[in-house]
Image 1 (cartoon, rainbow, N blue to C red):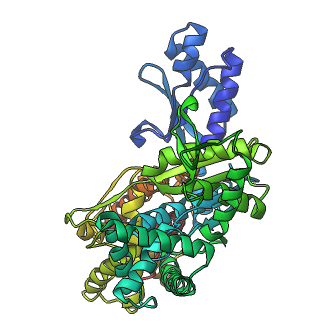
Image 2 (spheres, one colour):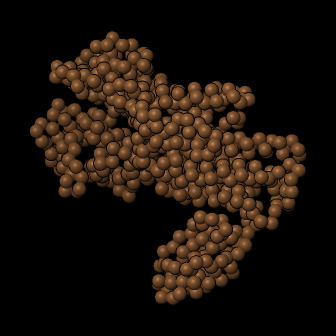
Image 3 (spheres, helix red, strand yellow):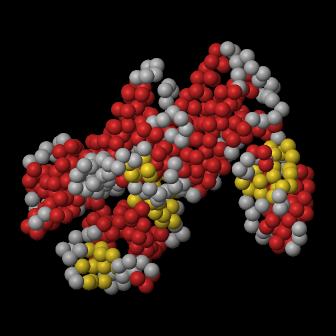
Length: 558
């Protein structure tokens, strides 16, 4: 409906002689002011040099004659135009929502081919909490884009070689840890990292020698330990991604991108890069960027060079892409500004007319004060989720739940994902484990439970042989149905701006509206059972659809 109003207002402005006036159509803060409102009259009045309320009157008159589906059009304030959708239109939208068709017309990205790279962990240790946050944000962005008509390719770029892996291999040797045990693998990395950061010069040189030998394959023992550690990490990563609902279409590895990146850098020394003190660097100051090292003094590719190799691999696998999105920590903003600038210089033809986007995810900070550390007391993605699952399972014991383990996992995943996605991208997340599992508002379980209640109501109404239709619909629409009607535009905005938090806010508001309606309205044996069932079906479907787009599970019981 919003698109229809926007198009009609645009036609009205053309009729008035102000086609260039910029305006918006949005949902008012209070439904008492209509289902939609526009500032078009205020914008057009500046062009026409006329009174805004007079212009608003002409716009309203035009729309009342040329736009169907409205109950009335009102002028408010200094010249805003408010639109009230008709009862018949809302009823039709509830039928569409109940049948999963209300959002079927959201095809703003139809035909777009988009790569979304996210998670991308270091494989030689348990999944870092930052990678977990990236997975949650990246998966939701991928789903939002899919629901907007785009063809999406999910990509993962694990680090399987480099200094991080060398630290882990060195730690395995020194600590005599078992590379098949994920906890011991993490301990080996911490030992190696501590030695490299604060240990002796000799230890640092030993780790650098391990790194060189892993690149050239000159030490069979180190290579075997690397392979064993990577296999262990992959198994745990795959298990965690399955819990999170993520399945990648393709994976690339630093062991693949490194050699390509190194060769690309060597080929462009002189025109893109320059040699400096034995290393090869990119001077970005003239473009307002930083200078970055692409080959170190040992001739090994840095993360920057590996990104060049990664782009080459991505382009080979998906040459006709329109947009490439990389989801990583906010601390890498400047890094990707340089990388994208260099990619465009080296791959001029391949990137022409295409978007390269970095989406930043923030850091997660626990209200308990316990933080992750490179040197010890590490909170991993797995341990955080496991702790939430245990807490969720304990809460499930107080309720009559048939499948406790499965529901506890779904609730824990929902709690964590909601806490991450309710923030705008790039903003830090203050995570309160207890609040995240609450059934009382502003949490994933609160939204999940609203959907479960809606599904339960539907089953009871069907047992009572109530048929969903609009024959007994009340004359005045309720807040619940007016809110459901806005779902498509919220979904579209979240996808367009790559910001899942718009949808998170919406499903929370929708859950509250359903709970309020549920608590005050009797459906079976009430004044409008048929339309009540239809509203329950529309609410359940919209909540379920919204949860899916966020990557949050929708339990059948709680």
